[in-house]
Length: 288
Length: 256
Ligand SMILES: Nc1ncnc2c1ncn2[C@@H]1O[C@H](COP(=O)(O)OP(=O)(O)O)[C@@H](O)[C@H]1O
Ligand SMILES: [Mg+2]
Image 1: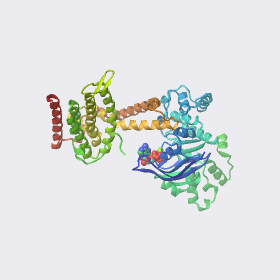
Image 2 (image 1 turned 90 degrees about the horizontal axis):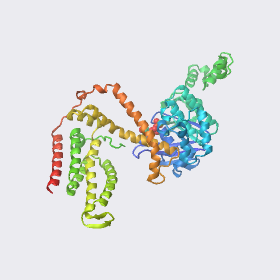
Image 3 (image 1 turned 45 degrees about the vertical axis):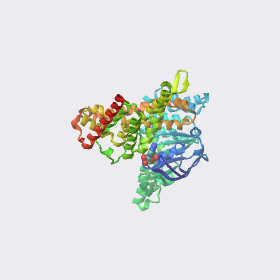
Image 4 (image 1 turned 135 degrees about the vertical axis):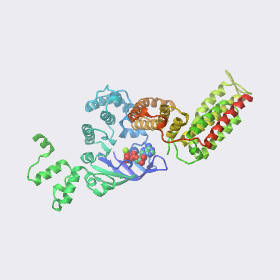
């Protein structure tokens, strides 16, 4: 299912325009990350995708249909939305009820739905009878994510899914999102962590002051220093190191060292440079 | 865009008056409206309230308030029409009748509520809540604790309204249709929202209380405030006018 923005202008009250001509397309099955400073308009863009906000000018097309022609419940069947704050999303007395809520709201609670809920509870490792409000921050975020995953929408929109989580929780959230993507779901994610963006996104869209200032394959954008600086972003450390190496020594500029984007590629390049063999990060862990 | 009961900066006479004078005036003004049923007097009061709103450029907020009060007072007015059989008979009811007196009473109620509400609400739009609570501590010697409780309550109203909006959006995104069906449907859908709203409110107030506590909230006294709130000539005049209005209202009721 594709999402298309055509010259979208939007605001919360007419006096202060927030989005000023946003254009982009997300193809079916893509994993796209939105980056930019706080206040750039990323969350506003996400709200336009699921129709919580309608464009004042231009069009937002979900699967080719303008959001202005779809009811929010019809959009909810197509687009799952994870809010920046999980507490605004959680509303039921038990974890199980919380996961059933979406089916109930859409009026499609049946045996299949119940089975799906149980499967998701297993997958996430929840206790179905826990009180959602007594869970810690990370688990509440996971629950909010689970309540989106369980509905199995063709598109998921995630507003800062990893903000405020510790490393282990972050890995868990991202592995679930990654699995969703592999199963064919279109993933649109707002994220401040460039390491996460580098590890998971296929394409990056950079926003600044209500406009898209750059977009392209993840590492094309992350290696574009001028754009990143203009949007007050820093690239992932491996990208930083490899770019620094290329600039420091012109002789290295055309070697794999200066082109490495991931830990794996960097290890490969270093191993090749010192004449050793390297069998990937997993091999490294096994060797240990 | 400013929220409900949120201070709007400005430099009008009402902005510059002493917060205590504004508060005393608003309260006495409201009491005066409730002391009399004299329709002419109430209309004058209502006009005065609107005049004040115009003088400080708050007409937009005031119209919003008047609309809200109108909805509430029309419910009261309907009850009054059905339950006060006075004046010339217009319509027969199984338990009495609707008369010209009933209509007059209903209309008076609407005007009274509108008139009484305007200065009270206006006070919040032209006064920073901190100034209001600090001056009440300084001038009226109200314990800081109570002033603070009041100030935080007012401060949290827009926060809660914002929370409510966020929660409704989250539900909408999961397929709940607030805009479908009638009011009954809407209420049925809103009930589950009370839980997350209450939880987030209690969390917020609790952490605000702890934050205040660890920064020495209990050590604060009347002398801690550095800003002074002297009552000037205009402030005293405002209070005198308020007392005069109240006296007029009482006399009108007692004499007529
Ligand atoms: N509900 C709202 N009402 C009015 N203005 C808002 C609202 N939400 C966000 N804004 C404003 O819109 C701008 C963009 O916000 P947002 O889209 O949340 O940015 P981001 O998610 O990139 O940090 C900000 O200047 C913010 O103050
Ligand atoms: Mg945001």
